[in-house]
Amino acid sequence: MKRIWPAVMVLLLGACGVRPSGPADAGRAPTGVAPGVTLYFVDGHERLRPQLRRTGRLGTIPEALSLLLFGPGESGLHTEIASSSTMTVVVSTGPALIRLMVPLTIRDVTPLGIDQIVCTVLGVHVQGGGSRNTKVQVRFTLPTPESDRLRTCPLIR
Amino acid sequence: MTGRLWPRGLRARLLLTFVLVTVLGAAAAAWSSAGSASTALVTSTQRRLTESIAGQIGAITPQLTYPPDQDALDRLRAAVGPDTLVTYRNLRSADGADTGLVTAALRAAVRTRNRLVTQRISAGGRPWLLVGIPIEITGPDGARTPSGIEVYAVRDLTGVDRQIDGLAWSAAGTAALALPPAVLLALLAARSVLRPVRELRDTARRLAAGDLAARSPPQGADELAELTVTINEMAESVQTSMATMRRLQADARRFAADVSHELRTPLSTLTAVVEVLATATAGMEADARESAKLAITETHRLVRLVEDLMEVSRFDAGTARLRPEEVDVAGAVRDCLRARGWLDRVDLAAPEEVLLRLDRRRLDVIVANLVGNALRHGGPPVRVAVSVSPEQVRIEVTDGGPGLPEHVMPRVFDRFYKADAARARTPGSGLGLAIALENARLHGGDLTAGNTSGGGARFVLRLPRNLEDA
Image (cartoon, rainbow over all chains, first blue to last red; front, side, top):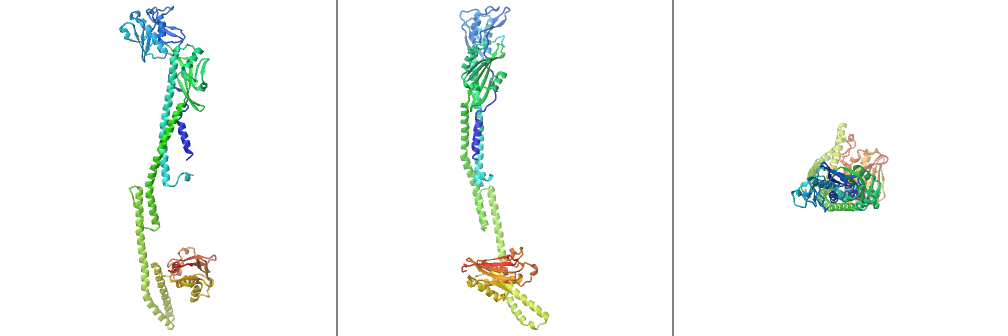
């Protein structure tokens, strides 16, 4: 009897400790690396076209928007966003909503121009591991009802 | 082995059982709760570590150049923390000696599953958590492809192990707390069972010792109380039948005493008549003389029988009185033999003078009976040997006959017992040995029957030397 008790204690304590295990699944892998950032411009048929800008990394949404506002360069595509002296965009990201404060008025952009902005932002968001169902709200500098719309990109569904 | 481990006493057994059951129950409960708590603890710690590492990686990946160079891998490793290994194709960035713990199974799982993989291992006596993280490339359309960058982090789980040990010890302590109440309860239960049992045992002992009035009061309405009632009933019925038996026995004895007493008066008359008849046999015819002699013999037998019966009745009634006097045993035995004319037929071996306080008449009855039996039923030579020891005087009567058969031995002192049914008409009353035994006992001595090595019967009378005056 006296020999059994220590054995029982050891068994009890031993069984309670951290036990080794085999490899176990623990969720989705992180993402976010990319050879560059995808910007959206408009071709001659008034259609949105993705353009990979090989920056070597994905970067942030303001960086992508800065590149977008800078223009398409020599590629046969054009932008429908009026050029602006300031390129600073304020971005606040919520759980299901990305809110942009662009240095533009509603007159500076066409609906396709707005889609350019929304698609570029959503592209960076999705490539960085975000949800594809996230909505984008583009707020313009002057008050307009367009500032309150929650938008999605027609190319990213 | 079992007898030594398993105590015999009811109290110890109850105690052990209670303690075992309680401790086992408490230990099982404590063990299971500590087990589930430890599982939850391990799971949550694992999830916290994994999520934090994945979060750190997710925060830095958009700033990493792709395809990565050594500098990018170093930055990624630094962001994740110490004990981290980052690989991309042939490039490798490692920090900390523990990264060698990463198993091949984990690497294989990371490559094939392309998901976060965790594994717990034990190395160097310490528990470790291995986290394998493949980094993916997500296209703008949401399609995911492996990037080839793999991050392995090694985290020490000793803290968790210590917490779990603490849980287990506190559980064991709780189980130990159940011990004193269990012992107390066991003692109470044992007492409630053992007290009636002990009372019953005492009662049974008193009954066995002859105290038929012994009873134990039943308490409560349990099985032990029923047992007590049953034992009381048993004692009651035994007592009743014993009383009935004693009364019947006493009645029988009184009847025998009354009968023998009543027979004495007519018998003395008959004796007188028979003696007159005896003097007149000379003038009778042969047939009549034969009948008269038979009547005389049978009358004498009847007288002896009645006398013996009266003697036995006195023993039974406890009215037999010992009249001790200083007697020379050897002389008394010789006188006894001489008075009956047996001296020339009996070998007497006796020391010169053995003085003893005893009832001379009763010694004479015993010796006469033993020697008479030996002469009548046994064969010559009949020997009487008197020997003395400091405690007692032995008188041994042996004969050279066939001895006592085995089945007769235990009943030889019974009243009216005849070893041979065909010998029913012997001159003895059938009470001689019984009376001899009673006489020996009256002296505080004993009379035993047996056989000699030569085959003859041997009766030994032992009389103590320190007889106190009755």
